[in-house]
Amino acid sequence: MPPFLEKAQQLKQQLNWSLIFGVSFFLVVVFSLVQITSGVREWLVENKDAQIKHLSVLGKPQYTDEKAIIGAIKKADLSSFFDLDVKHVQHLVQALPWVATASVRKQWPDTLQVYVVEHHAVAIWNSDLLLNQSGEVFEASSDKLVEQLPQLYGPEGSELEAWVAFKQFDDMLKVNDLKLTSLALSERFSWQLWLDNGIRLKLGRKEKAKRVQRFIDVYPRMEKRADAQVDVVDLRYDTGLAVSWKLLEEAQLQNKSKA
Image 1 (cartoon, rainbow, N blue to C red):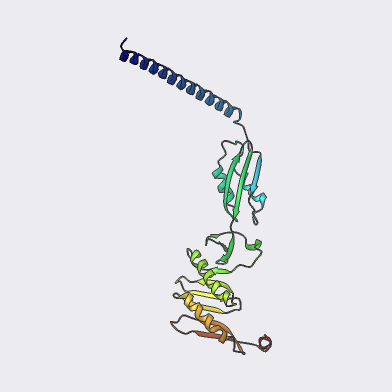
Image 2 (cartoon, helix red, strand yellow):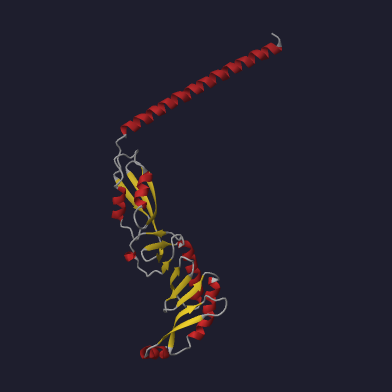
C-alpha cells in the first residue's frame, strides 16, 4: 500500500476513535446531569416543608429591643425556608424606629440571621425628629438618649446643610472655649446660632464663617463689661457688629466679679 494511503487510513482510525470518545463523554455528562437534577428534585420534594425554627439577631442594637426585632420578623411568613422572602423581612426590620439598615440571610436548615445597624443620632431636628451623622432625619423617641443633643431647625430639605454648618461653627467656637448648642436656618436661609452661655448670634445669609470668626475676635472685649451680659450679637454687616446687653442683678454681679 502506498505510504500516503497508509497515512490516510491511520488518520481515519484516529478520527473515528476521537468521535467515539467525544460522543461517549457527552453521553456520560448528560446522564450525570439527569441524575443530579433528579436527585435535587427529590431532595426539594423531601424538604419542601422545611420551616424557620431559629432566629438570630446580630449586631449591637442599643435602642432597639431584641423582642421588637423578633416581633417584626414574625410578621413575615416563616412557614417555608425556601419560600421566605428575605427582602420582605429586611423591610419589616428596617421599619423599626431606630434601625438604619438590616441584612437578612437564611442558614440551612432552619435558621434566619438578621444583622441590625442602628442610626447614630447627632442632633434633634425641628424639635420632634432626629438627625443622624449623614444628615438624614428619622423618627424615634429621644427619651432613650443618654446625652443631650444640639437642637437644629430649618426648612425641609436643608437637614444636611444645617448639620455640616453646625459642625463647622462648633469646631470654630470650641477652639475658643465656646460651645454651640443650637442652630436655626430660616425659610429665607438666614442663619442664627445659640451658645451655651445664652448668647444668640445673627449671621444673616452670607459669609457665615467669616462673621462667626468676627464674633470670636471681639468677644473677649465684650466679657470685660461688669454690669451686663451679652444677649444678642448682630453680625449681619459687611464690617462691624451690634450688641444687645442684659443688665445683671446684684447677685449675678457678685458671681461675675468672683469669676
